[in-house]
Length: 58
Length: 255
Image (cartoon, rainbow over all chains, first blue to last red; front, side):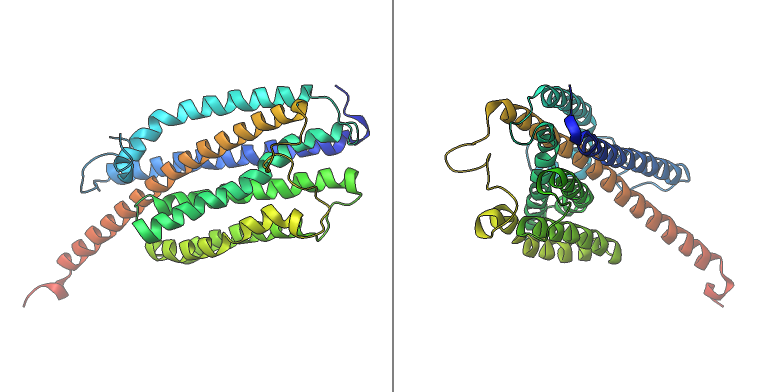
């Protein structure tokens, strides 16, 4: 596959998209781990929601 | 599970635990097929290989408007139906929509330089999309500026509805004004004018990006529900410790 004289524009477009999507995915994944950790710490210290159910419980 | 069950955050969390792996797998497969079809697509007789930028620029541009449309629906959910997950959906969609809008502008500039001879021109389409990006950033700032989530949700919902007026302006800017952009060639009366060799990879990539948005949005909504639960637990902890202090303080004891 030859990308011709404008290969740098094409490759940069795809790399920029891949980078932003990767950053967005990583940010959401890290945020999830942080929230779960903070919730676990609070519940371990004896603070429990009134419903008494954990966040992932149906 | 009915739609009304989803109004319960616990039911929603339970659903996301089952849904997210399936969504992530479907997104990955669709994007890989789309990338393969994009790489295999022939060069355009005028644009050459730069037509391959279209396969990522158009899905990003489409999602920049679609995400605002999702936020507009969520804004109605907040103001009219007071759905408990509506403001969660609106808040979490904004950064994702801003990212796709940013990418639409970047990939558009990178496509414009070899085709038009310029990275940027203040024409109606590009300017209205830049305004859309600024509106996304404004809403994200407002969410952070107002401490009470329910007050922030109502203010953001009103601004989102007002901002929705930009969507038809973006869509029809190429018809209403003289711009560097070509008129619509996919979503138009009379069907697409794009050749099938380009249309099929474009539609597969657009579907893959749409599924990517759904996956990221569901995951971000799950995080926001957890964040609100953590906040509620922290407030309960603070209340408990302040009542312990007042009970132990000699000043609060009766003489």
